[in-house]
Every structure is written in structure tokens, then in C-alpha cells.
Amino acid sequence: MNKQKQKEFFQQIIEQHKGILFKVARVYCHDEHDRDDLMQEMMIQIWQSVPRYKEQFKISTWLYRISLNVAISFYRKNTTRANRFTVLNEQTSDLYNEEKVETEQQLDLLVQFISELRELDKALILMYLEDKSHHEMAEILGLSVSNIGTKIGRIKDKLKTKFSQ
Image 1: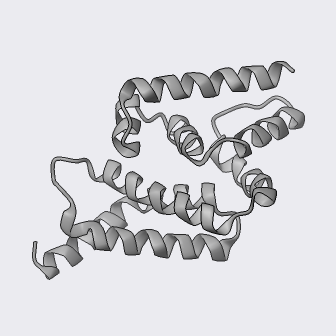
Image 2: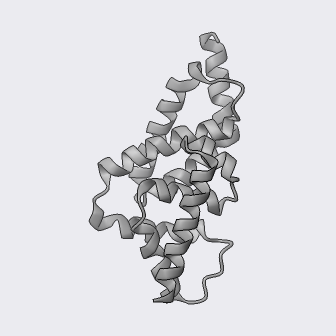
């Protein structure tokens, strides 16, 4: 792919799939400036990865994989354990529009639960809430489909335990 085609491809995928980048950035950054920085880092990585894109892969899967990898690295670099709860607390309402949490206390418990998850599990929850199939999640995260099912099952079990306490 020549430079002009790379540029056109990059512009096209960013235009068509920018929502993926925004969703991932909102989950991993609560501060608008940090979110902008993360978006820039994701776009740089996508631009650098364009020459290696293989048409056999869905563009959205490829973008999720890149954006999640960049976001997790960014999150680890820039977020301390102490403020992770705050980051997720401000963003949870965006993730759970379809979920009807009955009380504020349950919502707080859910936010706390998610904030305690490892970065990979947060990515799984994000995709699960977007109704991604296990196969899509496996492709994006580079895991087996059965591993995805197991991890989601364990997260659900932890959530049930947390809510029954």
C-alpha cells in the first residue's frame, strides 16, 4: 500500500470507527486532557499499524485491539491505584445506559467492583456491555474463545458474590 492509500485508509477508518476510540478513551481516562492525549496516542499507533493491516481481519476488531492495548499501557503509566475508583465512577453512567441499577448504593458497589478489576477484565466488561460476541472479544484480546467465556463467567461470579454481601 503506497503512502497515499495509507493516508486515505487511515482517514476512512478513523471517520467510520471513531466511536470505538471514544468509548475506549472514556473508560480509561476521566480527565478530558488525558483523554485527548490517549486519543492522540491511539491514532498514532493506528497510523503506524496501517501498513501491517491485513484485509482478512475486521477493521473494528483490529481497531479495538490497538486502542485497548494503547489504553491499557496509558492507564498503567498515568493512573495510580488510589484514583482508579474516581476514574471509573465518573465514566460508569456512559457504560451502563442499558443497565437499570435500582439504587445508588448498588451503582456505587458496581463501580467499586469494576475499579478493582485488572485492566484486561475491564476491557472484557467494556466489550461485554457492547454485546460483542465471545469470538470478537477473543480476536481483539488475543485469547481463546473458551478463555473469554471462562473469564466472563468468573467476573459474573465475583459480581454476584459482591452484590450478595
